[in-house]
Length: 336
Image (cartoon, rainbow, N blue to C red):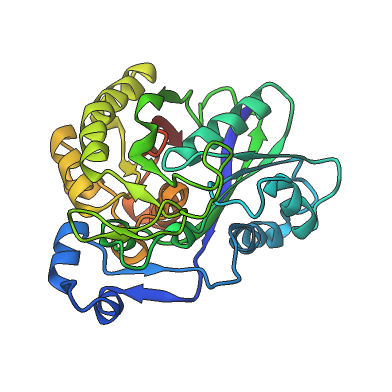
């Protein structure tokens, strides 16, 4: 049996925050500079009472309402903004999605490379005969971690969820999901971090004390912090090697790939990677403009968009490359 993506959907919250909205809140910010640096026009933001599980339920139901509710036997939820430290959010999803109790359910605490990590897990479960139909969900509400006056991250991130149904198919001729290539550098964990709130640094009296950095960004230790320069250098160092390893592992060349779907970090990052990897414009997916960086959901959103365009573009083979928080990276090839 081989694992194959049967269907994929995504969900975005109703609330939108445009660059004009950001400047209206922060008059010292500049619309043109925001777009020039990020390439992002708009991002979708969960409302105050809307959690990652709420978003995941919406995305999951888009798949399950097509008639798959009775066949799912495993749930993988990739999120770094769970509803609770415990219980596992995937367990809550089992109930809220109306699935049977003979269902496995786990959370994956992974970010920008998380969809690929989760696909790898789903593939392993199916091809080792532990499961037949795995629901792979991603859901993030990073906006709840972000200080409203921190331009370094508020201009980048949006909220979203996705759901992919990965199923067993009896086909030995096609490897629909390739063996992933993984990488981790935990020595740089603090390059993208929410410092307080976990067991290492529990919330305390100073967790919400605001401070201003040298770039006039305001945040506290309970907010998301990103060292943009470190993340950029890390990405340019690791992703080209990841790209080559994925091709080599599958005995492919660049010309065999119909579309490249990289984590949609921002325009500057994607421009730099496209140039370094020498990917032609027509093969380089871009959707960050209208969604922002939705962390683990950027790649599945891109995959859904490209699947909708599949016939017109004759897409048969896609390379997925994720990289970021952890720091971690992962890549694989998906065939249709």
